[in-house]
Image 1 (cartoon, helix red, strand yellow):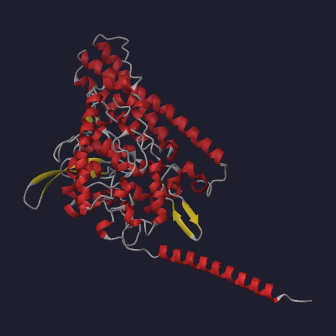
Image 2 (image 1 turned 60 degrees about the vertical axis):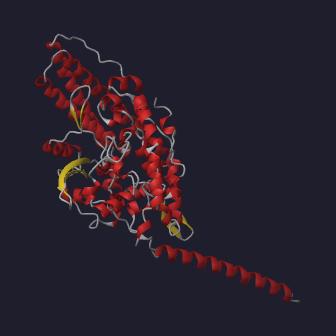
Image 3 (image 1 turned 120 degrees about the vertical axis):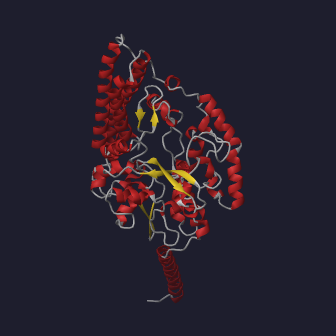
Length: 506
C-alpha cells in the first residue's frame, strides 16, 4: 500500500494546530478563572463608582446594568386608590410607585413627590436619612463626616454628593470583593435582637444581610448630640425596631413602648405607624428562609459561562430566571410553579383589598364622628384599633413580594388587620348613633383622584414645585458632583431625568 506522506503531514499539522488552539483556549479560560479568583483592588477614592469595577468584574457589572430593564413606572395610588386615604397627611398619599430596578433607585428617590422641592441645602420636608438605602455614596459620607453628622439636617444637604445609585460598593469590599455592610445601623439592630453581627454570620446569611441593610422595617430615631465645636444638634438616625424580635408584634410593641408615631392621620386624627419594607423579617418566617435559602439564591442565581461561574446581578423576579432560580431545587414543572405563585398572589390580594377598604372606611367614619362632636376620649379605643390594624396591613404588603416569601404569615397579618378595622367600625356605629347619626356611608374613594381629594393632596401644585426643583437645584447638584469628580457619568444614562415619571401626575 502506497502511503501519501504529504497528506499525513498536512493532517498532522492541522491536528497539531487545532490542539494548540484548544490548549490556548483552555489556558485562557483557566487564566480568566484564576484572574477572577484573584481579587483586584478598586481604588478607595473611586469605589463608589460602579463603572470602576467593570474592568475587573465585567460579567457582574454587565448583569447589574440590566436592572435598568425593570423600568416601568406603576402608580400604586392609581392601582389601589384606598392608599391615598390610608396615608392622608403623609408623603405616601402624594406619590407611591411599585419599585423599579436598582439602576433607578437614586433617581426615583429624587423624582418622588415625597422628597419635596427644596430650594437649597436647608429646605424641604425630608431628613438626610432618606438617602440611606439609595447609594454607595452614603457610607462614604458617613465615614468622612461621622454617622451623626450625616443623619443631621435636610435631605437636600447632600444632594450634590449622593449622586450614584445602588451598586458594587453597596455590598462589596473594594479590596477583596467580599460581601460587606458599611452602614452601622444593621449591626446595631442585629445586636439588639440577640443575633450574630454581619462579621459573625455565615457566608450564606451574609447573602441575606447585604439585602437587609435596606429591605427591612425602620424608623428615624431622634438623637441629640454635640459636634466637635460644641454645637448641639439633633440627628434622625435610621433604626430597626428589632429589640423584641423580627415580627410585626415585636415591632409594634417597640414603637408603642417608645411612644413613636410616624404621622397624625389628616382625616381621622389617628396616630399612625407607617411600615417601610420588612422584606427580610417576613422572608425569615417563610419556608425558604427557614430552609436556609438566601435572597441571592433566587434573585441572583449562579450563571455559568465556560469555566466561569458568577452571580447574576440583574436582581429580578425569580420567575424570569426559573431554570436557574427555582428548578435546581424544585421538581415540579415551571408552569406548575408559576400557577402556584399566581394562586398565592390572588389569595393575598383578596384579603389585601378587604383590609384596605375597611381601614379606609374606618378613617372616614371617624372623621364623621369628629364632625358631629365625638370627643377624643370616645374615639381613643377606635383610633387604637385603626392604628394597630393599619400597622398589620402595611407590614403584610409594604415589601411587595411577602405573599411569596411568607404566604401564611402574610395572610395571618391581613386577617388580623381586617379584624381590627371591622372592630373599629363596629365601635363607630355606636359612637355615631350616640351623636344622632344613623346609617352613615363613607364617601367614595374608588379612584385616585377622589381619594387624594379626600386626603387633601394638592397634586398639581406639588408636581409644579417638583418640576421647578428639577429645572434648578437638581441640575446644580450634578454640575457640582461632576466638577468634584464624584459622579459616575456612565451610570447616569437613561435614568429618566426629565421625566416620564410625572406624565400622569397632574
